[in-house]
Image (tube, rainbow, N blue to C red; front, side, top):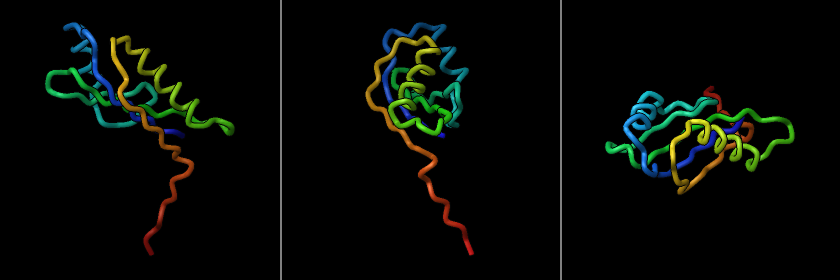
Length: 95
């Protein structure tokens, strides 16, 4: 499983687009992706969870997240993209 965070800004978002972004707001990582945004809905952070196949790497995860972002259909510009491979995360258990 990969978690991808995309930071960007909207370009020419209309009222219907603003309403759609507000409807998909949230801080959770989901396969469809969620948005957090500034008060004017101009800058955003898009969080997406991408399933990982045995041979998948960060490039495939980034492409999957960008496809999920594109599926929302809002005009945007990507400023920064970060990928976390959850398979590499180690959980330290309390004793």
